[in-house]
Structure formats: C-alpha cells, structure tokens
Image (tube, rainbow, N blue to C red; front, side, top):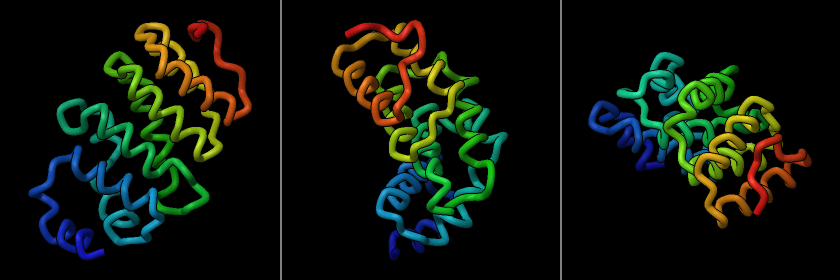
Length: 154
C-alpha cells in the first residue's frame, strides 16, 4: 500500500503502461487501494483507452485484466466493457501473446465476451504460435465455449 500511496502523490510521473501494470498487480492480489478503485479508473477513460498515443495495446490488455472481474467491484460500472470495446477496435495491434493474455483474463473472470472471443480467434489465425494456441485453447475450455470458427488447429 505504501507504493500505491507514493504513486497517487506523483501520478504525472508514471507512464500509462506502468500505471496499467500497477492496476493489474493490485487487482491480482485483490488489494482494495484507492489507486485501483478511485484514481486509475479516472485516468483510464474511454477516450484514453481508444487513443493509441495515450494507451498502448499492452497497457490496454492490462487494464482489461485488472478490471475484468465485476465480482470484485474494483472499478466503475462499464470500465471492463470500455476496455473490451477498445481492444476489439484496436485488434490489428494485438500479438498472439496479448491475445492469450486477454483470453486468460476472460477465463479468470468467467466472462465469455463473444466479440472479444471472435477477435482473439482472428489474431490467433494471423499469428499462430503453437504454445500460445494451446494456452488459448485451455482458456476456451475454462470458459466452456467452443473456439470460434477460424481458430487454428494445433
């Protein structure tokens, strides 16, 4: 919590990527800190998530991962949907690694967002790496959904 307090005091000194990484780390350990609950949701507005210069694609994936599980009640209503929409719009920037991270976050939260699943399958088809594909397939199984048409066979 000391680190979170220090970041809040000097928020302008941290990059969006680092803030997203901190949000994901705090979320993973379920640390209900003001940085995660109050400060960062205001920083990651819909406009910020959509803009490539303000929020890189890896930061966007981390934001989704941090705020995806609505059961934890960490962010404002609609933040995970905004992040999911931004990822779908910016899917051309995704690699297989980032697509795997999105699918793993969806599986952890038990949130089978159909549009994201389709986009991740398209990314996997474009960048088929065997290890990533196997991990993605595991995420589909955890979600209890069939991979969308076009998902590469292992």
